[in-house]
Image (tube, rainbow, N blue to C red; front, side, top):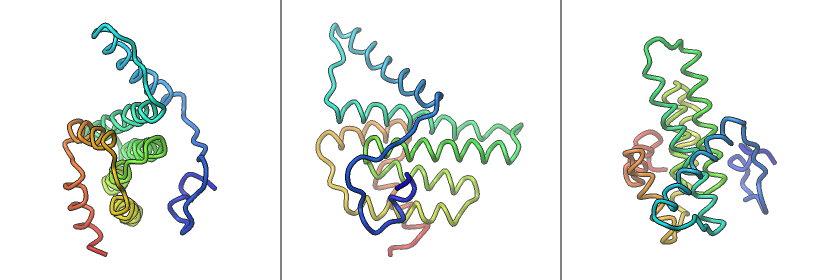
Length: 172
């Protein structure tokens, strides 16, 4: 089962999903982890993470980088093809972030990237995926903290994302 197939299937996948990262994505993740290690060292400690926290930090790094990529599409010197390529890369990074840490907000970012690229059909599909997963999502305290952090980085909290997505696909 491929990465995109998990959202097309009525059956939830069992077990782990194999996700391959590009060299650029690995570099982004490593730089993000190093920034957290540096922060811990500045506080006189070491970075000790649970497996969930490690995955969340990796996801956060990918997501933040993808959001930075999206801002680059405002460059008037870029062709439509270059902009579409950047937005496709950003959407794939957000999807990989979701595979690392299953916060539905990452799927909202996927949808939004496709919307910016002008692919409204794909955007609507991902807005629906986001709304379905968000409706079923029960965050623990750790997830809630991650969501607050991501909202600060993106300027978009879950309530805003849900409202926006409903505005795009209705309240199905």
